[in-house]
Length: 188
Ligand code: HEM
Image (cartoon, rainbow, N blue to C red):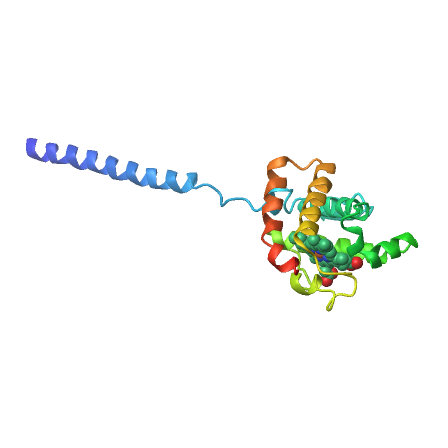
């Protein structure tokens, strides 16, 4: 009888140990950190918000952030003497009050940045980065880009982002993303 109760106590202690080990495993699962957020999530992600440019319409917050930066950047580029010579078609249109090319570029660049930063609900259907920056394939690109023009482009994106109060650490990540495309864009 004494032996039996000793065995019973051992069994009980063992079971508690086993149960708490299971509990620890469960805890571990609960504490598994979420996967690293994408850049798209960091700039607002999929939360739906009012679109300030289209009354009554909703837009993903991440796309709204990126579109704001893109639109500001296009204006910065338009005033940048280093980059103006590359955009004669666009600047000519805007000078004549025709914003159709501007709107198309805004959409195209916004789609591109959405996809590049990890958005899942948008597609980019424009030219690939090599063709888009080859004057032989894209008549809106006046001449091939060199490294200095690429640096100026990145600086203008930074200015566009700062104009929209994007935090510096996120701007740095955008810079890294752009840098991965230098080899496709710079063609001389
Ligand atoms: C990583 C940097 C860059 C990215 C991500 C980028 C992205 C793009 C995209 C998505 C388009 C639209 C293509 C289409 O709709 O099919 C475009 C067009 C264009 N890009 Fe870039 N680009 C970059 C750098 C540059 C640089 C450095 C220059 C000039 C030196 C430049 C000049 C142009 C021009 C002139 C167009 C045509 C604009 C228009 O529609 O009139 N891009 N770019």
